[in-house]
Image (cartoon, rainbow, N blue to C red; front, side):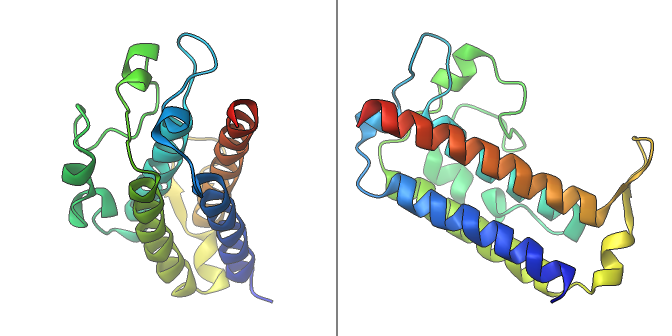
Length: 167
């Protein structure tokens, strides 16, 4: 097994969880926060997808699916197209309102497909490429992609917990 196969498997597990989470979910549950200022399922799934999209597009030197696929217009959120939700205030989190779980799922699926296509194009030796020298030690492509899988897994777990609270 190649190391890239492990990354694709990790993203595949996230994809399965995104689909299970969003299946049959009503807008009231998608956009409900467990407490004032807390994250919603809609925000969590949008954010995990935006971060994956931005991170993979950066290392692949491609356009983000968010913009190139027209998702920014379909969502119509009141943010810059470059916004991923990182560092959002409670007020900004509350502005991510999605009335269709299918919209979140479809954007995630488009991002997942682009991510898998990119990862499958890599050799294991490509994972050693330095992609960020702002850290000590510098971040390799492999470490960056593991971070994407880890971030996605944490956020989908948070969203699944919320679904359990509300349904």
